[in-house]
Image (cartoon, rainbow, N blue to C red):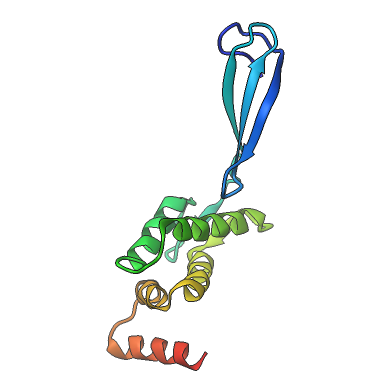
Length: 150
């Protein structure tokens, strides 16, 4: 790694830490030429994932859109932002592992609902109501009855 002070390529790693989510590695380094200490961060570049919308349009996968939808479902629930971030990270990682680079909104929605079902049933029903486009109270009641049976 090139030293930002003297531009030397000789350095040693003093300390390495992995973030809680395991997505970033932080390294403290010391230049062997001028002894300057600096920090670097390493992340894996994401795989390009294309989302196929219900109307056939295609767009790049945006984890922030998923995070927004999950946050809305968890609004005023005792769900931490860390839990939401974990769901988004898990889904993003699962999508990156798929053999194909295109994924349907249906697949993403089903993954989000499965995670929310385990985390918070109210958030699950809220997300499902938007995702499945519930038209009336009967649709809500039917979904809640399914949860009660499980």
